[in-house]
Length: 492
Length: 95
Picture 1 (cartoon, each protein chain N blue to C red):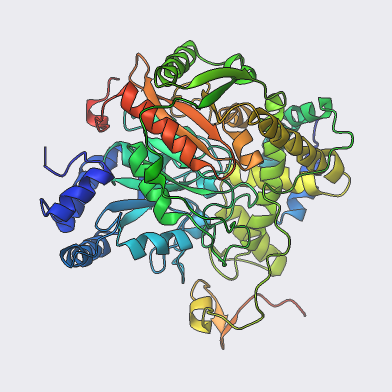
Picture 2: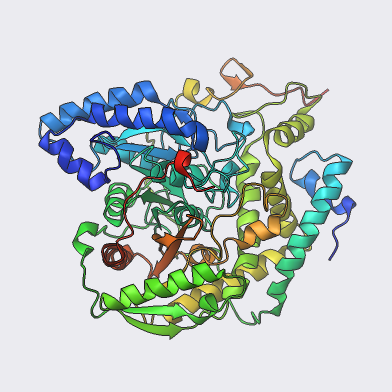
């Protein structure tokens, strides 16, 4: 094992600054790990080897000048819907198979300004629509702990690459659980920040009132470093919120005395939660109690309606957002169009995959004349009640603990023909997006078959610090270990 | 509620998607199942509840009316396959 392998970001930072190894060495080892392991995982759509090595050389100069900051010289992967100027960005779709963006997203710019080394673009569900990363035009991502299973989705490549050491941290996006659910299935830490905390400028939109970019890494401290780098107001995103970004590293503590954690009765008694998940969450709650937190029962009475409300809201917004793909200005263009309408219809039908078309149809239907009030408006009212449930709950607790998923990662192909069952995989994560609150997934052990499970922590709007505090204390106390996933050693 | 193939065809037209018969039948099945599930929202009493379209209450994020950074013509056209004289080219739309 190389001396750079399996390090956390905050450890690599210290070693780089101390001159124990260079960013070039760290990047070379990461790229070698990609060539070695990624054929079995398929977590990358594009590896940007030449540019990564050049960025590493520049980072080394910066480190030598003593000007390094948090992520200087750290290899980071980006979900392939974050625009990167000059580097192909596909959204895992045939529609954007050859799309080279003429500008970069704010989060990519911020990472590059820190001197992070962008290793490449990570695989995902097409246009971030899915919970398994199977709908990618570039083939499914495999769970690095067991390649017969899905890694979760839609940020499946971002989670799998981090778990296997194919980058030290990554960015994903979360519209209904797309960071937290794959983080849980791959045994990494993932955070969906509060809506408005991170700029969405230059991130291909799925459902604009729900989408949020967030960090994925192998430790809580690493996630905090990544959020620190990307958070903040951006005048180019009119929905980003102009509130101060605290120093997240200041929130770490082992002692949770004075913190009250709510357990939603509806989540913990929900049908269909597998016994292994249920007992892992119970154990995790005991650990939080050991750290000093007080545990109370709370109620989120509208939680059973979250998935239904979400699929109306998200699909409606998606149908509008994806109208921009017209075959004319960028993206796939059919070679044989008779007229303009034919150009639109053929380009879109040939360019989009099955799940994307399904959601466009649901959304178009829900917004169409005669159905708008029954579906879209009704879903927005239920959304308001779901958000109010959280406001009420946070009157008597500082954060909420729950499972991330009802079950561990399913087998590849198991539910890919059954969209409704796939949607229900997000039952515990969706409410946070509807309400706009931050949510985090922290590894809480593995099943008998070696598949990771995740503890979900939900916080008050813009209070990521309390999530980091609880997650850090839990991570230290539970001490689940730091092994990298290796698909060659999976227990099949 | 069972969605008919005709309804799928109508919605697909609105969404500018082409559907053949096999697509229509499959999508009709999937959409019917999903919308039947969505119908559980009818159980919720939403009398007097204001619809929530967004998680943050922002009103009119205004900026100064000033020319800022923008893409040049070359960059803006860099993603298109068909162009002419600095414009996007589309099939003929008037006879």
